[in-house]
Length: 489
Image (cartoon, rainbow, N blue to C red; front, side, top):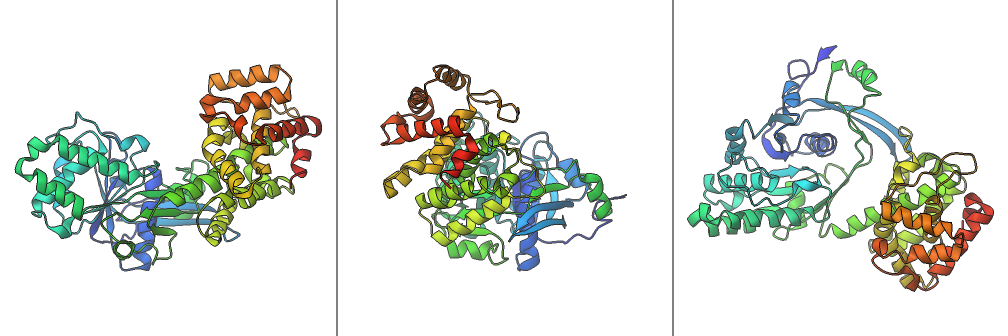
């Protein structure tokens, strides 16, 4: 088996335009794969310098393979199974700022650098007041970035054309807004150290740096332990950095307030490359779309499928009854609560169903059942309320999904003897145990809807909800889950 590096495999050479904080599976299978496609299909012609955001990481592995690795995409696209294997060559080098701080800071001096992209986990975008401008480097990611920005401001004497476009990929809503606020906090914290540069640097950052909020969406299982021998045989290389991901991808980039969508599309031509990258006025509706049309159906299909004897998400999608339930919840109920163009929503929903129907992944419905009540509260309850407001009736599928969760939390075994093992906050679990001990379905329904610690309100006040939930619980007890589903589809 041949070692994978620039001596044994061809590697493109392009100007370093992107600083990437993070070397993990997600960025390599998502962002770097997107850059690779942009380089192939447009004149973008960029390479990526990877910066390890914490002291211990994978930069030595990356440098050992000269930034080369393979991405294996699996799933369905446009109804067809996909199983591709591509060698990604956009990473020029990788740096550890804790042992190579001079090289890290020198990135600010490179005139071609234009973008900063990051995924430092949800906890990475945080302000640490103990960071100093003189630290080598600052411990937090926003601190390191502020140090880099100030060095660039100094090197290019506040040149308006040398500001950076910053696109965080951390999985928090309005990630760019939070990162921008952290940078302002560091500029203000280091005011004395910045001295006479303080006002000018703050103004340069405000006017000539562009911080975008983004939404990223691709499931990345990571290193394919089960398939690695087959993949290495197929490629002919001993690649230790193979990363496996689903075929679907989506990146929504909210334009910064000081740049138009058209300007950002010209600078970052991912849409021109035919990629599913959307430059938008606001990330919010797309965030709501994902939570509502992907996470929302996931939350209710899981207990309904499991209590009907179906264990795998893919099998639930293809089931003659449960499949109709999923589509009812997604298309007829939750989709009606969103404010994006219907054609766009329908396409996204179709993409979600393809992802659920991934032939390469046996996704257990029980793996989705963890903390089902809080999930229903954030993913499905808002849609239930909007649907009632717009339609004047309760969404039958969502309410039945809640009844299935309540029934699942009773525990015990299902009809075929498979265990029912709910897993949630201990206080919630105890409340459900106490409610089911009453053996009074109306009392159980009222008690669940009154759980303030879950809903932050009394849901018994929603007209008709208590009675419909009670009726659904009764039907599940009398007829079973599957026969109950048949009554609404």
